[in-house]
View 1 (cartoon, rainbow, N blue to C red):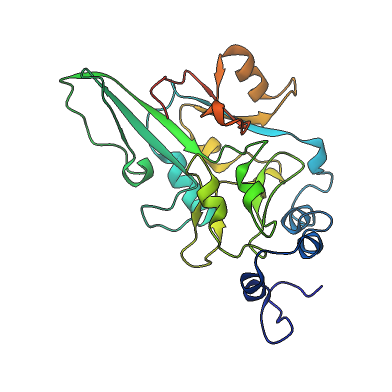
View 2: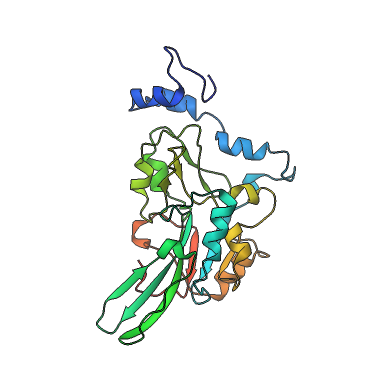
Length: 264
């Protein structure tokens, strides 16, 4: 098989070839994704990561305590800096939403520039309560984005993280449309799908995601599922846990505590 970026027969590169031949035959798809996903292979072959790291030995997830979130936006800023996310105001791997519940029964949701610069003050007249909710890819165990990808560019790693192989992505936007959490976007330069990866390049080095590291109130908790020593396990034991849009059966791996019923 020719490597990504090399011309195919007739002068077409892999991406052009796939665009012109969709729907992709199962035999071709099997060849493209045969064996371990390329992105995961590269991660496990990175000389800078601990040599003992094995994806099959980990099971990552994130917890979010909304009662602790103060809407400072440091997580969204750290994410952009760490992952080189475009600075335009509508590209985010993670962002903060403010919910303003009014006495007339209406709820106003806002996220100016993802919450990076904070939020403007609200007129307290007619306000029942306000609160902040961090959002990101839910790293679903049953991800619709993986199911609809026609070339297998979106896949789930053995340690429970949903990634996008940029060498295979053809920018068809199917995964963006399929995501019920609005957590994906098309990169304006590479024209490939992007999303939160739990900072996978940090995980394989034994580090936590950048958003978790910078949170001043420890509203974000990261760790291993079902590991007794994991901070995430303790978080889930001490709180009543909820997930976003549970009726969709996507089995999210981002778990919320103190989630208000107005959150959507």
